[in-house]
Structure formats: structure tokens, C-alpha cells
Length: 202
Image 1 (tube, rainbow, N blue to C red):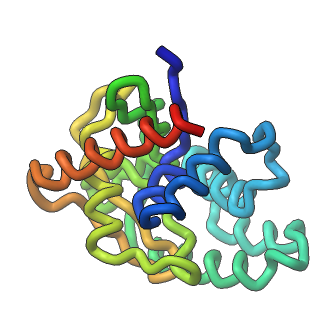
Image 2 (cartoon, helix red, strand yellow):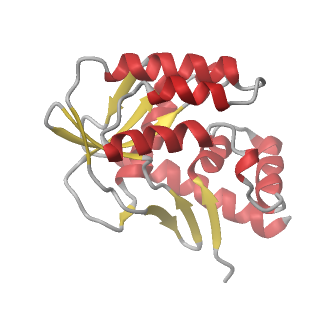
């Protein structure tokens, strides 16, 4: 059986689509060109935020990053930098290594490695950063799906941290505040089955 590996953002995009649009989404994933960093809009910012926390650098490095960003990205980057610095303001933040993670169902594996492992004011969090608020609102349905998938993921380095998604454009951390909803888990598995079926048919 063919192993199918997709990114978390790709799978979430699939979840948000209906009927025939899902077929298009899977087709684009299956036949996409090889990954290249230049195609990843937020790569530089994600990497710089991670570097800052890993090495306990000053957040002012984010301002310097803006001098090295393509003009097509500058507005979105400047807005994200402003809100990320606002999120961090007044907090004691320490780094820890979260390792790799993935969520699987049958032969589908969704890469769900958190970008950040942060101890914030004494509480450890495994954090996925969400940058797409301007295109797709991070509503409760989407955040619940994301958090459920993260919480049910296989962790290379087991830890007791809380799964959380950071809505960067709103400076808002959304943690999993209760046990995983079994209905949401069943819904995700149903969506995964749909993804696999479409993948095998195109």
C-alpha cells in the first residue's frame, strides 16, 4: 500500500474545502513540484523565530529580518513581526526541544511537528504557528481540528507539554484546554479516509 505523506497545512486546507474542491486540493498535493524554500511564504520568519528562542536572542532580530524580505512579502511580514513581539511582551519564555511528530490514519501520515517548544511563564507548550488569518479565519472548528490532530500525534520526544496553536496575526495562543473530543477525532478519521480515497482515484 502506497504511503501518503502530507503537511499539516495541506491537510487542514483539504478539511476546509467541500465536495469537488477537495478533489482539486488532493490533486494539487499529489502532483505538486518538489519542495523549494522560495515557495514557502513564511519560511524565513518561522526559522528566525525558532532561532531566536533556541539561542535566547533578542526579539529585535525580527526587525532586522524585514531588511532581507522580498518587497512582495514586506507588509505581511511586518504585521506578523509586530504581533509576535506583542505576544511575547512581558512573558518569561524558555525553549525546549519538541522533536518530530506525525498523525497517521491507515497509510496517510500528516506531518504535525510543532515549530516551537516554549515554556511560557512556567507552562510548557508545543506550538504550531498560524499565519493565514488574512485568508482563512482561525475559527473554533479549525482550531479544534488542528489541536486534536496535534494531541493525537506520535511524538518522537514524549513530553507533558500542552498542544497549542498561536494565531500570530492576533497575538493569541489557543491551548487545548480539555481532553480531545472523541467526535472531532472520528470526524478527522472520516476526512482522512476521504483524502485517501480521492488520492487513490486520481
